[in-house]
Image 1 (tube, rainbow, N blue to C red):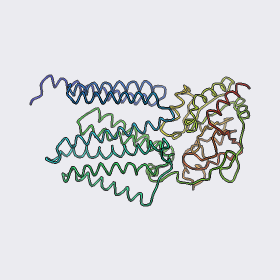
Image 2 (image 1 turned 90 degrees about the vertical axis):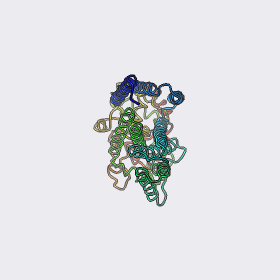
Image 3 (image 1 turned 30 degrees about the vertical axis):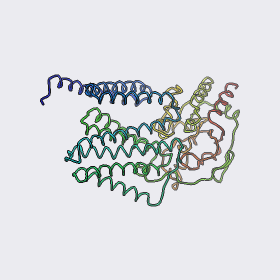
Image 4 (image 1 turned 180 degrees about the vertical axis):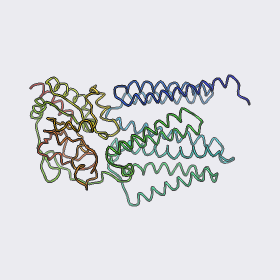
Length: 473
């Protein structure tokens, strides 16, 4: 039946709406590259998504599918609002991981439905639909189950250490081979339905086994990589459905996630392959008590009053936040301490390592929540030259990104990784609960240096005490 003028006009406006949505996503991504404009970027992106949803509603033309979609959108929106308002900032990496998994799972489900809708048991499936559907199912499924394992590790429901077993790479290789063979069978039309579900099942298992050997210290990289997988799956879904906005948005997420993964790998001086297959963090260390030693030397424990005096009479203090600050929810206390020091004429700066925390930009998000001025945040390359002229470097749980072994110990798994040069400061104060190693499971000789002192205890409680002691000086 020829398309009516009204139908043609409606489709034109829908295409225009999708184009506007794509532009909004691109602009939103651009503005979110800076904490100063991130809120505006988020607002623009939300506006773009609203336009896309409205256009899709018009496309469904009040059919039964429209009402089903409306229920889904309403339920998803309610759940999203509740989660966004109730989640703790320390749990943000877990939420990012699980949301990313939902995106991958949704793409796989849509691709499966579109594939089955073409009646593959009775008629040949067009090549373009077959290849895009099966690839979406594979990539989306890997992202789905992989993100669930990442969530469980970050939530500490399961161990954050790498989980390895004999023949691990062989098993993964066989699963990948099954997936590839299934793609070939689906695209050439042989046993298409069984082959499609074989691909789906192998990808679901591969996603689990893919993330199990990843150590907790590498979670920022793996979250970014899985995010790029979800974007690619969404773009392929767009090709399967003939939906331009999915193609644009998926390509943006896939490309940005891939670039971020490569950048974070570079920040760790490790290839993505090494992150995926290196089982980083399997080293076993001996735990020590609060006044123990990480190795052959000893550590020097300090008191709140001593540290407060050191900070209050310094000319420049650099605060180095890590996951210890996040887990203690100490970002507001850190900001209050900085305010008190600045009132005494101390210059306060923040040193941000690219892979500090559990997700890309984790420290930036936490400090932004505490209204720390963006101008006070410095990237690693910008802040490292400042440490030799700094009186005190205050390290809050940033274990692995301050480890001097990365420079000199070739046998260390972090050898060559760029670190924050805190050991070059005149005095270093480390806030930790105990001498237990960080998430990477590696001892840090920084704690035994003569210019380093330890302040043991919960980070927030310790900083609150420091605030009171600084005020009293």
